[in-house]
Amino acid sequence: MTDYLTEQEQIELLKNWIKQYSLVILTGVLLAIVGISGWRYWQQRQTKNLTHASVIYDEMLTKHAQNNSEVTITQAQKLYDRYHKTVYGQLAAFMLAKEAIDKKDYQTAENQLKAVLHQSNVASFRQIARLRLARVLLVEQKPSDAIKILEKVDDKNFNGLINEIRGDGYLAMKNLEMARQSYKEALRELPDAETIRPLLQMKYDNLVMNP
Image 1 (spheres, rainbow, N blue to C red):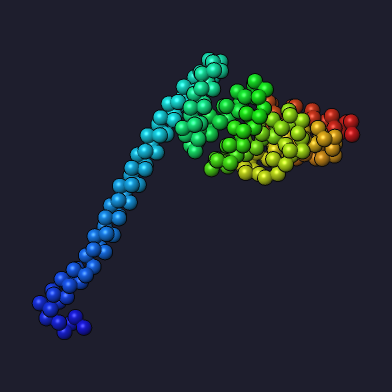
Image 2: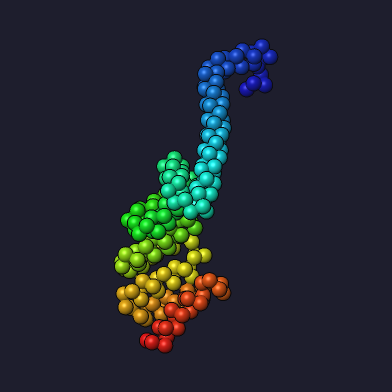
């Protein structure tokens, strides 16, 4: 149709179109600008938060290396309270759990590990939390609860350790057949690390020799 319009008529049509849709166009442009600005602000804020969190995390590790438990806990709690959704905050929760276990405050340890389990987006973190929580439950003589927490697997790279702790749970429940089977699976999965396999092998051998 525009092929049959004069140049002036086409200009008038364009003017009318701009007048009609200018508000929509302007709104779209403004929203795009606000969106980009908001995204950049969010990125800058995230970077700033992570930088600050890393400083507190380094301080926490330094005090832990110096065996300063009180300041370690203070820094870890600060890190968790302010940045619990970040990796640093979740590492702080692990530290708080460890300090609690050292003091035999198992309920606090459970709470911290469950927090990681429910909040972390990192599969390996959730799996480590499950493993440590299961060990705490075993210390509290709750083997069935320990086995149950290990039913869900977040990271299959930990299968060896999962089966070993599962075996410990079955052994505590006097279910020797399931304990033996779990230890056997653990031996199959775990690497030939000197710090891991000897004790696991001994657990398995004791069940084989003393069925």
